[in-house]
Image (cartoon, rainbow, N blue to C red; front, side):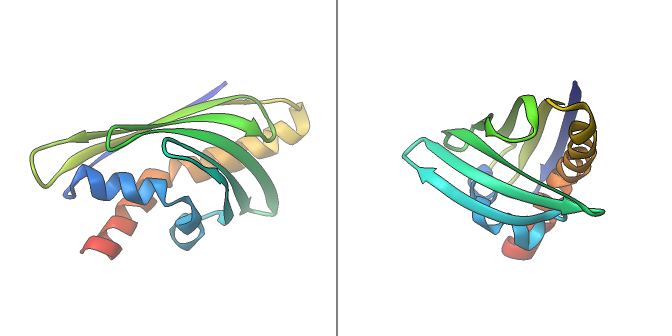
Length: 143
């Protein structure tokens, strides 16, 4: 089982950062290794989406169901992909009027030893960089 825990203190409102994380279709524009993103279904508090990842010659796609708690959390569960276990959570905590803490917690393990090892390495690299990429995107969008 691979676990990833990343967080950052950002000089932006929770709403701004929550909106960037929930803007899944824009991930290829700012997340290294994410080459495609598609919303499969969107409801008031649930989004199903597919991400296509590619890095170092390894390509992999996976789909998640994301449970939205507006401006507080986004909880991820696997729908389809190379993992037998996958779950994650984005957490958003306000720090005054104009700052927040964003955290990403992921746990996953691969279903196939050979394919899984490659998928795990790819996903580990991409997901480890997600919080940094989010901070850069916020700077680009909000200044």
